[in-house]
Length: 145
Length: 195
Figure 1 (spheres, rainbow over the protein chains, first blue to last red):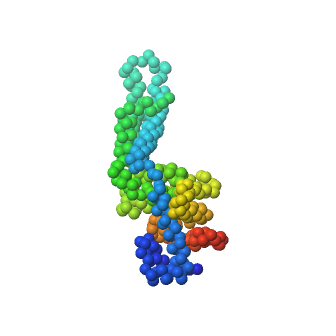
Figure 2 (figure 1 turned 30 degrees about the vertical axis):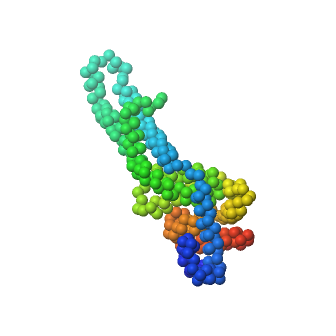
Figure 3 (figure 1 turned 30 degrees about the horizontal axis):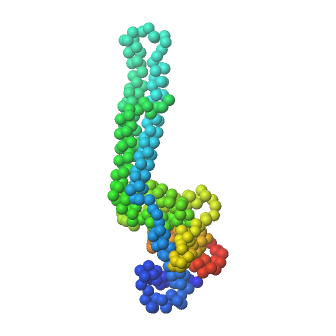
């Protein structure tokens, strides 16, 4: 059996429910169109019956669930990103503290400590910049996801 | 140690709000609900027939609309939007089928419990059961193609887009699937497929 070139036309008539006698006569003698009519009519009828009997949740409920779930996922994403940034900040702070606090210099006055800190101007500057920029970075990561 | 506690509460809530706004801006409630009202029945019928399980279709339906909402893609037209939804539904059904890894049981429709005096309802239910059983004997791709082509009236291009198969193969796939379903509906054992 081969496809018939009138299938499109037959299907269109079947869907609209308007079969003319000539199409009926053709379909009766054409195996491909007979298959098409049997299958398409059964499927269309089944679809109509399923849709008629479907007990679907209301659109308001589906919308509410979708927005709540989206909100929860957004919160989870934001928390994950924030935790990562905070972990980095804490590690940097601990590292900086270990470098700056030297037990031998515990008795030094403030001027001496500041002089000592000036040796670490670059890492301190980087740390402060990180503290300022981190929330901005988190904002962009979260909003672009 | 809960590091999130170190983050100022206001900063975190602003971020959550901003992301939620970005998501909801994609489709407002009114258009989402209107789209759902227009399409939910069609998607549920499709999912019911391609999975063979009405209860599973209930779950997949809600998941499909959530993913559609979450994707937030701008759409050119209603049919583009609808095809995107059917693509999501198809992928969910396929994932679910892979997870189950077992044959599909076709549940008897509720109408089988109809009163014996109501011959039309009983006959109709029997026909639907026949179709459900026949569809269950087809491959998932064949069920999907037949439903989209004849129940949804999708074009070959649309079917190719929804199912992720080449447009060229749709015609022959549809022809073979139709042949097989027609034989099953007539109570014949379909010939073994060569492809």
